[in-house]
Amino acid sequence: SDSASDSVVVIVPDHVGPLDDSAWVAYAQRNGLSYHSQWEEVVWSGNRQEYYKKTFPQIPSEPFPNRNPEGHLSFTCCQYPDSGVHTLTHVDGLSSLETVGGSLAFTFSSSLRDISGLANLRRVENNLGFFRTKVTSLAPLQNLEFVGGRLELTQIPLTNLNGLEGLKEVGELRAYIDANNPAYGASLNNIDGLKNLERAGYIGLQGTSITHVDALSNLTEITMPTEGYRGIDLSDNQYLASIEGLRNLTHVIGAIKLINVPNIVDLSPLNNIAYMEPNRLHIDKSFSSRGSRVGYKRISPDAWLCQPENSDVFFVPSNPRAVRNYATQADVCG
Image (cartoon, rainbow, N blue to C red; front, side, top):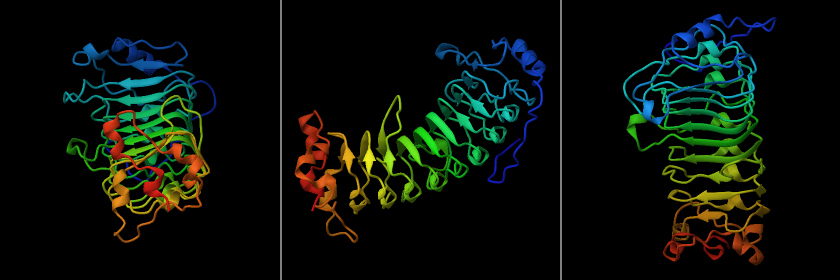
């Protein structure tokens, strides 16, 4: 497989009987890699000092021997960070995967472009991560419904999140594509693939080229328990001009961060928030200076966020010199 497209043929695995593991056993032995006897876990990588020395070739195309492994599957298969050694180009052998009880991660896989082998994946109980790969389409993840930990999309050349339309729940979504670094190709400008997301604990969309977050309109709460960040972070999005997609939010456990988003002039989508923890609402002080711009709207004075007893919701940094960079209740309400 050379590339993934938005048109995906789902490979339906054979559910009858055990899967033959001979190809995977031979591969592991040939490359000096350890493996679990029941293939409940695979962690194939070198440590940080070994990245320049230890790598392994393309994984088998034969079906992975366990459809529902309970442990972690981790493939750190190219040298660190971008050595030019290309080993993993596709994951066709993972077409048997339906659920992963731990995490599934692809790290420093600088030649991985095609993830069509993940077309049957429905649930990942812990983390699902792609870090410094060349994946340009998430279309093969069309059957993914649940990620209990992090869905991490870091420094990869995605332009959209199409393919995640089946995702209903995610603990943490971290999409840091790095729009300012041309080494990672085109930057994320469309998150419509999240339009069916119903539950989340954290959404981090930083350093992208998105202009709106309308796809998040089904979210009424960001309260799902996580082991890391909580809330929603839309900082460092230079082109973000609307947060209308947050209008249905009522409860947020964690922070809302709107820092370095110079084109946001309407904060009224925050009117319906009825609960946040103290010191968790981060808004640029500069918002209050945008009053002459078309569409400028402050948070309604009737909103929960604007009641005097809730003024402590607004973030106050511990560094006194940084206080002037953050909006107070008086700056954005009224």
